[in-house]
Length: 267
Image (cartoon, rainbow, N blue to C red; front, side):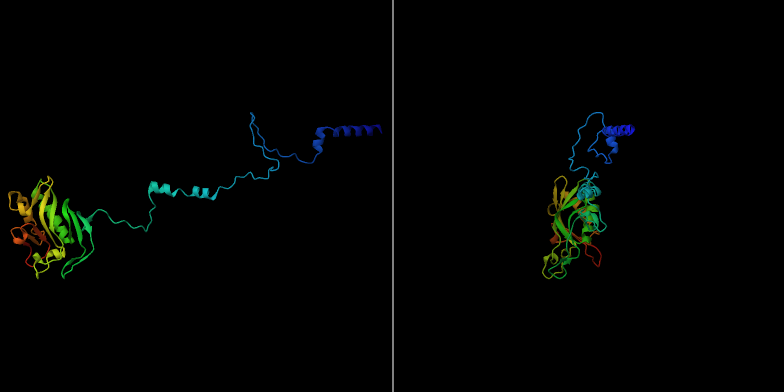
């Protein structure tokens, strides 16, 4: 009996110790809110007890706009660096060189087909020529391409060599396309001007500012290069006329690309 009483007393005293209570409790300890294991103390955010660990510790998904921005590079930036993207169906822009008649030395503008007011007048695929081989025309000349190419050939191979070191910079155009009869005579055949196959030159401008005219200088000592260039036009053009041909051409040179049965006509 004495031994039993002693065991009951020892058991009662053991229950009063903290360690025994912890071992006998079946409930787990609550998880700490935050734990910092550093040598120096660090301030930590306090989470309300009501929230506990009910919120997910996984990061929230990025907004859709951010996802798209990350996957696709900035369109504006690429356009600035590399230009707009090329597509297979993009059409090349027309050349802005200003050359016409498939000759880079002839500059001007293609214009629509001209239908003359009189029968026999008009030009298929005309061009408005402003410059030939670096020599400017005083006014744009409306011609067909055969005549434009003949004019360029004459300027390059005959006119410029005739003046030598004195550079020719301009031609004074007295006439080009006009729907009219020859020499403006009533009832006469349509002039080659009415077909876009003729051009009249009445003067020249030189690089030093000098201006020479057919009327004043053709027969003078200053007119030697003009006469040489006029003679050189024979063969390049079908018809070549000047002050010695008749009274209608005292003040200009007439060039046209008409074809004659008897061959070229030069006077």
